[in-house]
Length: 299
Image (cartoon, rainbow, N blue to C red; front, top):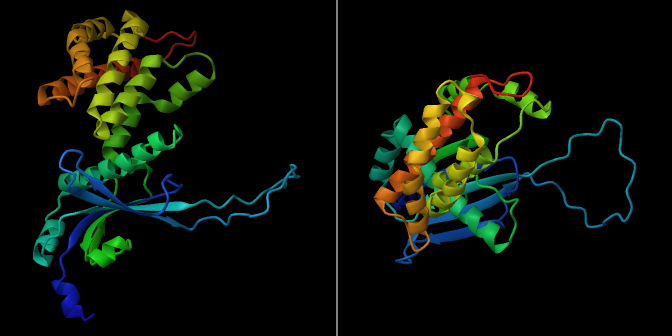
């Protein structure tokens, strides 16, 4: 095929991620269709890179381990999420060239939602709770680009950019939470993780992955746990925060009831996002207040 013919081919936008582990589903191509129209929206291409060699002979008994073993080789997974609708070369180049920081982040998030939809399907189908959603922070590299159908189906492209993580927001968040101090307190028995912390994290994962129904159900339990577990002296303004969380009980309960029979409305989704945000803010305030040596949180 001549270069002219390749240039005239339709182009397909894609987001691509590489992760330092096996994602779960088998390598191959997966068409992600709309649940209502059954029209294809994205095509996911999974490939394993640098896979460690599998041994066909299994040892029946343990064997001695070397005192200074070499690191075990690991597999790297590449996930390419391709928009199913083609575009002209000019439009594809204009799209890629016009990406600002926020537009690039939005495009990567759209790709991650497709990938996490497939990971969720694998998790449910295989009944394997160890299959986790993927995030940009976990990726070794994130790319955006476009190429012909043959190129992108092979994990290649005509033109692409690597999108670095924006470390500033993450650094501000880490600085506020002081995670190393909290880890020391948790492992040293001076503090205990709250059930609502884990439940709120699960709700946020569901919301980021485009699963508002699951997020609403997780949030109802997380909110009740927070109201039971948080104490007025956990932070200087925790009494006010607890009152705010109690005020959101009706809206969160109504949202959880509504999603049992269908997808949430825009108003319901907004109520979920706002309530989860306030719960997360209360937990950040508790973490930022620090932990006393006797295991109580400073006011």
